[in-house]
Image (cartoon, rainbow, N blue to C red):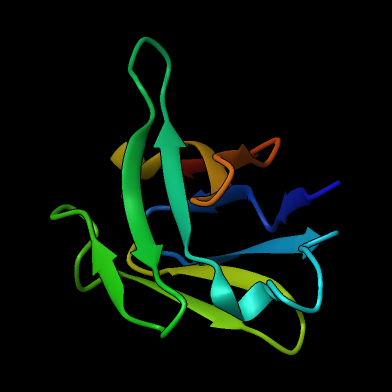
Length: 118
């Protein structure tokens, strides 16, 4: 069974940085290893739908939401079966629960809370 476990959230002042990690276990068989999958990070704030923040495909190509472009960096370490989201120059509006998501199989992690104080 595939599991995605996020970590690294917390409370930070505006302008600060955090790096989220998404550790993926049970990722598949030798025919479908971790490095064949695309992943995304989503953010959810109260009263709003989850919004896509960043994505990375199996080749390492990345895309970002407009409001995080230039501040956030998504990356992956295929040797560690882990996806990262480095968040810099954080703003209060970045506050929310951040979820890791594997595109194939539509698998979600449990989320990690990020709170940015002004």
